[in-house]
Length: 352
Image 1 (cartoon, rainbow, N blue to C red):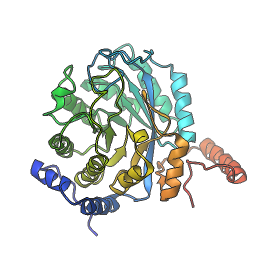
Image 2: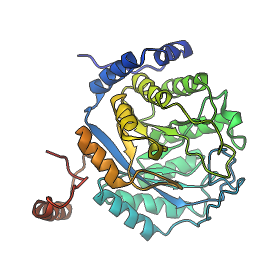
Image 3: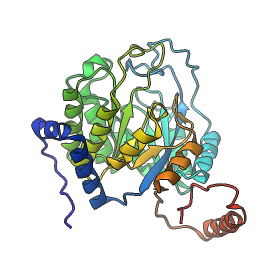
């Protein structure tokens, strides 16, 4: 069977027609496309760490880290490299294959860049894929990160260009597109998606996906977030999102960007197991794993693994060449695992 071709010429009408399909037909089509490009029972697992929290000068209306709003969030300085590496090591032991680091900046400062580059190199040395979100990037900053070995850079568009000014006024939509272009020029992979439930309409959701799918190259990772309403932000009282609208967004993203990892991202704590399962059926094949996403909570790791077991899903493994020392460590871990596996579920290993 020929895999669905990647397109970069989607019209708003075509995307709207996908959203309007009967729910069962939409999920069948999305799952069919998904199976052409991915193992339907593997999900890529990432862990996200806030390396610098609060006091961001941007005014994103959804964000508790914005310095424009009083959300009670305690401001923190840039984390020490040793702490970041320790968190990354723990994440790998719990089954993560990618470690994402986020800083509440408009853009990285010159004095902080050496520390950030060192973080990338040290986390990468653990055998993890690396991802960062640091705000806007100039060409030279993107090049430095790429040379340090950064695999992915996250920079979301958040919503459609039409609705964007209702959410953010301190940087333009074009600023975001320029950062994505700089990341691509530097040779890094792109992680880019948006947020649902910010008061946008269906046209805005359609517009966001058309913008993403019509980029010169599809983002390798497309996080689809459901707004986490935080007291003190302008969106704290926005109307709740209809769950089926969220699932439709996942399905249409899968159809329009067949080879991208579509990430079931923020907001999972508000989703029951059944909703998450429908998202996986609709083509989501990436999650953030752990108890916190930057400053908002996330389902506990054990709950994620319990759901994986119920669905017969296993964490996607990153292919890598191990050193002799790493092979010896893995052999020792395997021996220990066999001796104790009746006591716990190890998320780093595929189930039989």
